[in-house]
Image (cartoon, rainbow, N blue to C red; front, top):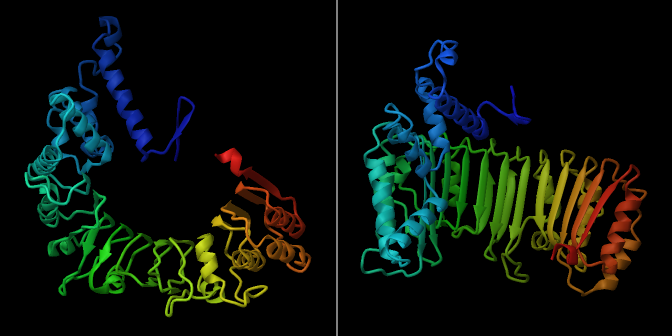
Length: 456
């Protein structure tokens, strides 16, 4: 079901629709106060407060979509609304809130804000908002201000310690959506307390710059369907056991996490996977996650020649993704998948693959290009191809010669209809790759080319 409001389309549960509805009631209610007697006679409830007639769950939903500052401002709308903001189920103290608090303190102190004062005030506001909240809390989000120094003797580290109090309180309130972001540039990461693992009703979890160490008595997150971890350290190599404790997980994102050397991903319900790994990566195994439909793997850099540093070779990697529809890889990952010899075509073809996105592809790297060609030839139902080039001028003759000798007639890309190549420098291998795409596509192909100069 959709709604049309002044030429726009709104879903009835979308933020835009709820805010538009709220503004409508606010405007209509203010207009009633200016109606003449003849106008009000046509309205049976002219003196009634329309805003207050909204169902309470609608009011809570609207306030939950607003920033904390704007939610508090609604207390002036009417007497009934004076304390509504105190019971909103969503408490969001994000980066924008932190910036507004910093600006407020700067204005109050003639432009000067100490790190300790900022963190103290931040901790006081968040703590009191939690402790004085009389209703249910479904969503809680904090983005702790950045710490420039590890040791702040005047109490600047109070916010990090405040996290433990917040989590202890939330663990008793059946929190469902939790976001904890510690904007810390240092290597120090705060270890989450044991009662964090008592938040058993969680359905969404996002952590940044924390240490995870599940206790022995941890009962598993049986309702968690989305997990996003950024800069999280898995103590005692607990990644696999923690992942097994999330049986209904559907979306998993791992950004620069430490304590993981073997990405043994498992989960029959898992649909989306994002991995951004460092050079300590040793292996990736996706065989126990057969229902993945969206996979992204980006590597910081590749260390060649180290014993035990390997990723499943191309055939195993692609063969373990029978249901993938969107595949995103970067040049470093392609380089690591190019365990020689790279086959002409993969026997277990990814028939479900519709979209292939390649980032930082070096057209001068023979290993990367040979893997790309193999992927294209093995994906008969590929519809769209997106490539961001990062070409270094080396080994030009080998790659150009390889692309020129390819037999395009034997492996046609019958369903490819869109190819977009960005950051192109128009070196010969890049041009030969465009020719290869054109010759391999019997149906009309839309090819969009953006040069490196255009993007810069």
